[in-house]
Image (cartoon, rainbow, N blue to C red; front, side):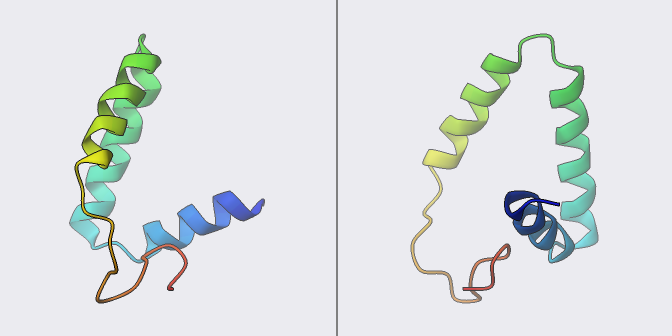
Length: 64
């Protein structure tokens, strides 16, 4: 397994059960999407609006 997959998997394992279910649902929507470019653009826009400054609990993926 490559490094990127391991980091994402670690982040997934650190999510609450409800967040895990939501991520799985969103991945399913992406996999079934006929217009993946629009899905990526929409998600990218939402991510850009999130404050990714210093996190009190650290990064869920890498722990830093």
